Length: 67
Length: 445
Image (cartoon, rainbow over all chains, first blue to last red; front, side, top):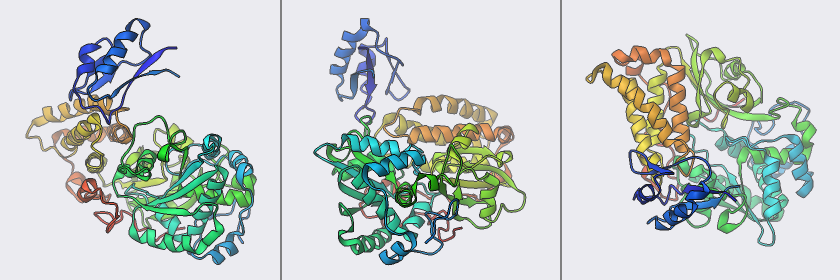
């Protein structure tokens, strides 16, 4: 099953760790909040995405099964 | 008793029907209940009247299916935090028992163990408490009143779910949506009070009667609030599909000079040019025309008004109404308000360059806020501002040299000052809107 990244904007505090660890899929807006690439996470990046999720200091990044 | 095919008004009686005997005399006892009522609501084509126009039967069925042993929760949303709307308050004042019937029927149909009615004014809560007390053991679960703070985003369904779960009345992170996981984890039906009043009538009169007003794709009636440049601003009940010009005629027609544009859907809506007044007032038709029906709000801009200035004031208000939870909204909305004010009121100390920079900046900002909040406030602001740039494109050019005369003059729309509301998290509703109601809500059809 393919995976999708999702950010909880209420929890996110713009630490920017995600964009450092996964620039392939995550950029930052002018205020430092993440902008996620649309679509599912490519299988080749899945384990990196998982590590990025666990590295978010605000626990605001999620990796979910796409429905 | 009323209730002929196609007859109006339906949910909004011309005089208040306050006590239970008067209510029963006018409407009779409820008919269909439970699963049979859900089927009838599905056949009726009733959609939510709070703005999203989601099929009511589908929502009821989704909650019932998940209720299980823990039971579901029903929330009647009477918050009406749109400053330009007055229909929910008027409905609750005129036909409180019709709404309470709808809550009782929805609670029974979804196997709910708890039911809440959310409002934001103390006087409303007092009047409704008396109506609820009068019903005694009439209802399957007692209706609990909740007085919720007056912030714009507090009426979002996830805000009410959080509040009733013991948290702040601020939007939550969805999905899961309330019908999946709502108040304290229970499947929760959040329904606008006008939707519930219609449910109570469908229980009595059926789907075929319901469809005898409105159009095939948008059946039934809707309460609309018309204000701005009309002779008799107020709340009116219309059949869905009534052309906008006839809706304006109900409100006494536009003043001299005619209609320049209509802000349809209220602050959460978007602009429709005055030449499109033939458009039927229905969700599908207005969507096709590039705007929305929303909660039935129509703000009329006269020929002598400035759409850019009105939009800038509304957007500044909305920017102050955010919950402050989501970065893109917290930063992006004030930036959009700044840029719009530059476009509408900029006096050219920065010259034409400032005007052009603000316009280019706006297009970038829309993309930076859309879809990036927990609720849809940033999406609504971007949609409203983008529609203003589209509909008032000619005015943009004249504003390059500075604000037009209308922009320097008195505002047409009574935008609340907002400062009191945005900062308050008090549970008491207090004295009402900062600038008084935007609409005289005693008027009606």
